Structures are given as structure tokens and as C-alpha cells.
Length: 165
Image (cartoon, rainbow, N blue to C red):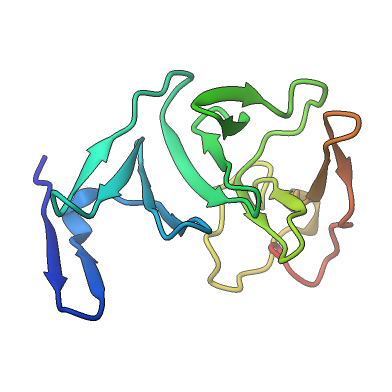
């Protein structure tokens, strides 16, 4: 596998260009300015060394990542499991649910939202505005993580109009 990351820096800012050959599926920047990418493993950019370093994580291969307001990272692995990385430790957050996560993101006030796959039987849509056909194939659900009860709760209702949020 060819891994190429080019870093261009100036006295005022740093710009990170990531090659398509790196197999990156998601990227996030936390409130402290740390850059993370998901590419089956999770990598954090080291500004001093000007390269990404792999984080030592277990629990599978990661496809999605998002950073939370409080400084934690949220991860979705290839099995649809949702994890929060807090203080260097991983916590499974969809344990009390049969919900298989496809993607995770945060609202500006720190609420965690998770989507399911868009279709039950065919390849998941990645945002090209395709609709489920037949309609019975539509699965796209939206859930919100409730930290008080440590579980996901349904917030979105799948409709025939779109197969993604």
C-alpha cells in the first residue's frame, strides 16, 4: 500500500494535504486543533514531526471519526460499533442497542448523532443523493446518544424521500 502525506507549512498556518492513496475514509479536527484521520486505523497528525502517527486502538478497523466538544473522539468501526475515546480509553457506546452505526458526528452543542446504513440489502450510499429503490430497501435511521442512560435513542424517521440525512 502506498501511503503519502504531504505537509506544507508557512509561518502563519499549516496546511495538510492527504493523498488519495492513503485510503482515508474520514477526517476530523478537535477543539485543540489536533487533526485525526480514519483509514482502517486512526492516525493523529504530529505537527512537530510533520507526519501522522498511528494511535494504538483495539476493537476493529475504523471507517468514521468525529471529535466532540469536550475533547473526546467518536469512532465507528467496520462492524458498526460506536466507540468514544476518552482519556486514552475506548468505551463502547451502542452496547445497549442493536443499532449498527454507519457514521457519527456532533452538533455545535456537543450532542452525538449517529446514522445507520442507508439500505438493507444493497451497498450503502455515501452521499450522492440516491433514493432507495425499492422503498422497502430503505434503512436510513438517525439516532442521538443519550449520555445519561449510555444508549442511542431514535430521533430520525426514515422516509421515502431520501436514503440519507
